[in-house]
Image 1: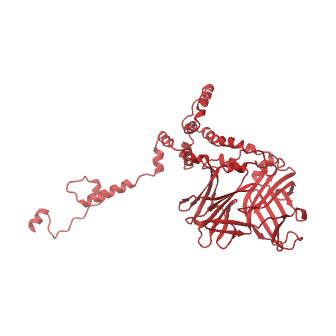
Image 2 (image 1 turned 90 degrees about the vertical axis):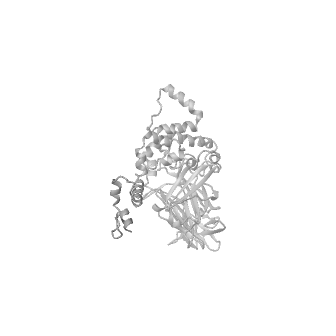
Image 3 (image 1 turned 180 degrees about the vertical axis):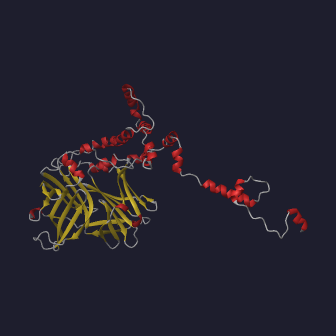
Length: 475
């Protein structure tokens, strides 16, 4: 033991040397006699230092624009447009004129010689890197205009009753509708469409629910249109955004319920049904008006919907006659289709236009509904029907058969507080709808013996303070 103590330089009664602080070990040079414990601590410090890298955004900010543009040049147009919404840096780079010029040339090679010869004749210079010109807009309009010009010749004449092209439905049957649901946990669900139903002036799209989607957890729902011919191409799909609904910023509107599901309206045209007691989504139903739906399905981008140019807003709201095309239907069939013309404009307080299509005092104007007011639904192997609600489609036209206000939305029928017409013995109901543009009120009477609904009043009003209509009234 003494010899061992002389060799090690210490006795068994001496305390073991304490390990030195990590900071001192890092400052000292490594010696051959360093303990394994100190090396482990040194490796721990090194690992900690490696983990403290700057954020990815700071690293990208330090990269030269040439390198970033080289990286972005490998993206497809849809991904490039989505990337432009990340921050200011990517917005500037993703809208670069040189990048979009190359995309345009690759997509339309037949026009390359024409563009080059025109530029040389006019003495124009090539687009400079970092500039934001019209190549992106040219590409978007070319992509949509190429197909819009093809289908525009097939739209046919305008229907004098609806104010819509007669072959709109035929063109829209070449569109595939994609619904994307995003929840608060970041999960993305794309359900398969189960049914598409076309009506006089609207289309109803239905998707079966998914047990993985919980109604309280939904954060946003977006609808895109994709052409059927684009599905056969090897290139990435180019979808046109119809709308995006952020459920957190919109109040829900209760429509009705049955023994299995409860139905809510999240926005005009969007219906969501969820299983009672479980809150998982049973079905999603979307109602779209056919007005400008061809343009919205072809001319939009994956991140931005189609907007109507300001130059198309013509006419005067103060004309004295209007026409109204009014439809009530469920998800399967129409229960009322009516056309009212001419309608005389009357000013009414806070409303710019007041139109009375059906008067309570004129019995000849009262309309009979051809079926019950319900909303059939189906989800996987189950199906049902929610009573006292339906889909209302309204097309208000000017004198020249130009749509002025178009609505396609689910509505519910409620019991009226007082009778609207004393000529009928039965229970009175009221159907109300209101948005930023105007208000619709329909009064109904249920005849118990005939088991039918009668519409005894239909009034449409437009608001004065709406910018959409006020701009048209000034032109």
